[in-house]
Length: 350
Image (spheres, one colour):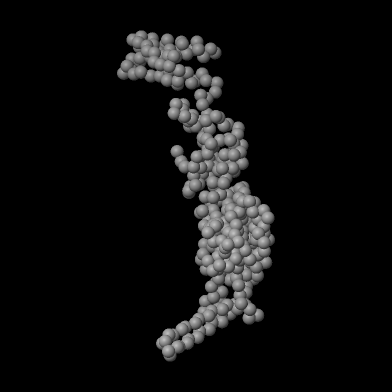
């Protein structure tokens, strides 16, 4: 079968059914070429012959695909397989989170050639099961000892010991930790010898000399991080089993007859079963992937306890700013994809 001959015969047959009027119009893609149309007798309607031409195509005119990708690595592989000079990545930093590859995107510059944008691939950043579990339970609500113990037993594999030296972490991990805890550098709080001090003039570095390798960490932010009390895996195991806490409250009032000044002093101490002051760490770490099949992140979780009058301890967990953590992870993943594909990255939707 000769497509050209058959198409010509089809055109001749179509015009034979009319009064013989035929027309030629410019091809919008190639103005120098003409497209033939025939005037049919039925309502004298002008129709395009493109649908007849398409019947003789041996392959589609252009790719039409809307792929749903399940992992970031697959999106990178897909982009490297199909990318063109004008291809681009688009990411959204707010729900619904998504990283989109637009293969046949518009060209660049003021005279850019437009494209149909019919070939694309989306990665929707599905949250991992551990992330869902922590966001559901570690929301600040009080739990009794039994519920607290069951949850920690189920998620024990996620709990991570704090590093012996925070500079052991990779730069991006440490900067993420500082960001989530809102720890910032402030060079205004320095003494005459260039040492960082707090508002009361006390040295912030209470754990020894300054580390030698301090190239990428704001020093004061690091000092603040060191002063945070993080629970270890062993701590969390003990808390899950249960601890005995007693409330030792004292109140004293004094009166100065000369000035008439009254002073009320109240002290509320929580003691363990041995009578020692109880100090429950304020934070602990979990090491989980934010997204399914994604990179693991070291995330801080706040730990609270309350001692009601009946003495039955209540616990509460609070994963710190999970939505912010997700946005940070999305941005990091999108930038990593851009680096691995060599494609431009835009944040926002289009």
